[in-house]
Amino acid sequence: MDAGASCRPWHLWVALVRRFRPHVVLHEITVSISARAMLVAALHDLYTIDGAVLNPCEFGFPCERPRQVHVLHLRGAAVFHS
Image (tube, one colour):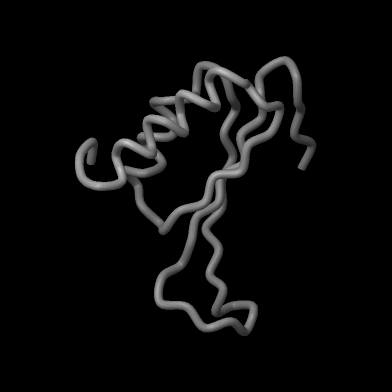
């Protein structure tokens, strides 16, 4: 999954996150094992990564595809207590 129209923006986003190292990053995408694997491969050395699958239909909103949201915490700068 390292090709296609969305590949370049992905690499630019990763480069910006690595350069500026925000304490907390939210990452949202459709549910995909390969998308999570790419996120972990790209940023696991700098961030702890926690995620959850969210389905807007469970909250009364129409949707065609569930989403997965990851919260990344910069190691040594932010701690997740939940």
